[in-house]
Image (cartoon, rainbow, N blue to C red):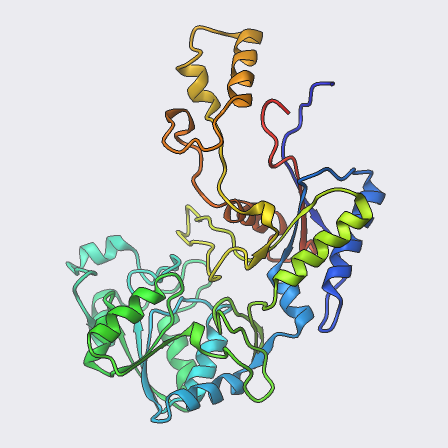
Length: 397
């Protein structure tokens, strides 16, 4: 066999603009098959075809209006007074949710974490917190105290003062608002015993601590719109988590019923190509911007559904470890052959093996989701489908 010089390849695949009611399985399948035909790319076993969650939700029509969110809040908090804690600072991810929550409220105690939200959007820098002599693990700040210490600082990328922005959204919805700053979820109980936890990945801990500390009613974003309200979309597992702004009065929810979608695409591609293609739906990846410090992980999970072959973790040897240790006395073809043989004979589970140290112990779907998210982007590339080849190959293949 001729030696290969190309390893893993990730390609963005263009697709038609997808609307509510479209057959997402057919569109994804046809788009990838057309790309193969036009560009002369052959399918291989264990190729990965991934589709972004946003077009799946769009095809499903999984939307909700601000008013439908408000109605669910009124049903859950008929008194209209409650805390909203640890929201992320995002016009796309949270602003419309907050409008809906505020529309069902009379007064909101808005508690923001500082110096940043859960996914790394900063109100202020940690250096400024240190300079002010504030202990973010213990100190609870009123809005007045916060402004005395830190003034009015806008987000470095968006130019938004999120404190003022969120207050304005709440007031425009007809509710009162009091803002406080703390990093212990239990601080909210000095103001109200009813709480909506808006954190994403720490939400279960926040709920547990609040309930143990005497909260009367505690829900999360994942408990809002878990069923249809006045004809709305819904997500029984994640509620409002993973939602995005769709318009000035609506959100697109995280898709539901995803497993039939990936299974349907895999089946259609198998019938068309004869190959066993892995399929997944992906949302946010899981990576951090080194300048803005923002974690690209605002969805509750990276992949809500995937075919069985994508279960598990990588099982890889670290080639530079082998070259520097086990085969330090070899070079050239002898080194290449020795490493190839080690790879061929590696254990099925390398956990604890020094030769695998430094390989990434993350789930395959999380790694692939990051690759997909970076390949597709979030703007105008027009490639909501990603076709990955060679991801499961190693040096011997």
